[in-house]
Amino acid sequence: METERIKITVAIDGFSSSGKSTMARRLASAVGYRYIDSGAMYRAVALFGLDNGFVSSDGDVNADALVDALPRISIDFVPQPDGSQHTTINGVDVESQIRQLRVSNVVSLVAAIPAVRHRLVAMQQAFGVEKGIVMDGRDIGTTVFPDAELKIYVDASAETRAQRRFKELVEKGSAVTYEEVLANVVHRDHIDQTREESPLRKASDAISLDNSSMTLDEQDRWLIDQFERVVQSLEKA
Ligand code: CDP
Image (cartoon, rainbow, N blue to C red; front, side):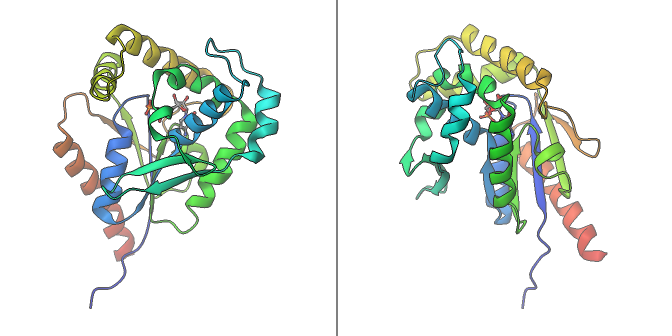
């Protein structure tokens, strides 16, 4: 009979559009872990802010009103028949809306509000209490799960990242230009790295990965190797 394997927490952080969500999702599915996209939670709050007049499309944020409204939103992830999951706000599927440039343009401003972060970090920690989770974001290895057994920090050049995101958006039918997407990537990098509350940083015990010239398969294999190394060393201990 197969024995239960030790369950760990996997934290994957990195710059916008660095491919961390794809890596995280594919690892979770390969090893039977839960995947949580922490960025989707910040995107959901940003969408809620836009739709309720707390955030304007040119970036004016009424932080107090948004923070007061937070207890009224419940964010969840609903599994889909194809194995993916869709983000919901109060039970309404907002998966495609949160990916649009309208949301990307304001999400980093919303994610810089300390009270927003405190609330979402607490929700993220609750998702991970039983381990067996892969979470991706900006502060997972530093703030959300500082004790994660496996931490990865992903990077790629801004141009490579913008190219990937542009292709994704065009495939989904968005009318965007490469220049707009690149400007958004560079802008979010700046806000994410310079905000006061848990800025994007590589945790001192994270493993760096530059995946600019890696195929998805190479990336998957690399990550599974890292995962096996950590789990096997814990199982031997
Ligand atoms: O997928 P992409 O790289 O475009 O970004 P995302 O993971 O969907 O996150 C959207 C935005 O949320 C980021 O640009 C950050 O400003 C913010 N975020 C954050 O501050 N902390 C996290 N743990 C995750 C996302």
